[in-house]
Image 1 (cartoon, rainbow, N blue to C red):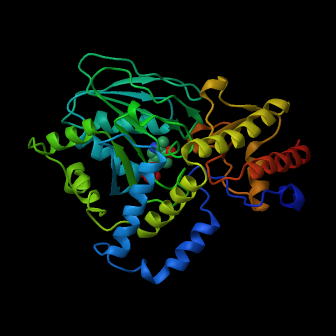
Image 2: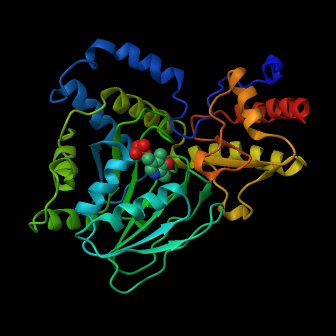
Image 3: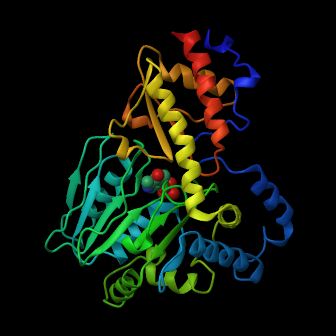
Length: 370
Ligand SMILES: *Cc1c(COP(=O)(O)O)cnc(C)c1O
């Protein structure tokens, strides 16, 4: 019967991609990549055509985040998951305090706990849908938390918790969509397939002078560091607009397109406002329906880039299935959360008008399923 539900065209979003990662890549950016075509793709990453794109991305991010003096944009291969290991080898002296309130925070805490050269981390935990908060602790030299927990749709404020110790923020889904003051963090890292509307395969870290100094000191200390994960090597290469090994060139290009577009459209403030607009539409719609509610009960913690909506009396998996059959994709919840839920990305690339249309589509489907 779900096969038979056809959502009327006037209720459908113009672009039906609402995945939290990989996320919507603007058609304009893909056209620009096709136009650049032969001059970039399939050419050497040690020559200017590709290095110019890495440089464009690095400069664009400095502008988007209004980076303070001495902060640098470092790029490496392997996505956020590779960066976690690079941090384990190259940024942590001895002991980490990690916030874990969902899948991604817990994975970084797990990477630290597994490292034989580090002390056991202090892991502050909280139930999915809430947040765990870092606090100053004796002997800790790295404090780590997700800025936005993509698996649950919980976002926290980026804020230093101690006078010393590096602050690390996993901003994979937050970057470009949530406000941030880079002075409150030493390493704001992400991969470009979420808020940056690009594809996977790279990590990007906005590193403070203190973080760079730490990475250089640890690299010189004689600690074993796998070459692929060596942050000092990544820093040296990034300064030359290169990566240690072959980068995902299309990913660099698409990310640079999105960053340039966001800078032209008013920068981070405008991008964050746009996300707040889309997310606000979804949350207030959910609050107004008796079959739906925002999963995150504390409005202060509700993410403006990944919205999670619980359903009652109607099967969210069925809704997601009907939406998919009608060209609206990737609204399924985070697998392991196991809730009767939809998860909808409201990154800067998503048009707030499409978020509004999505609520109309869901209303139409829910009425026919319940
Ligand atoms: C998606 C995601 C990751 C993993 O990113 P990869 O590039 O796939 O390694 C890590 N952290 C957060 C917060 C994420 O959303």
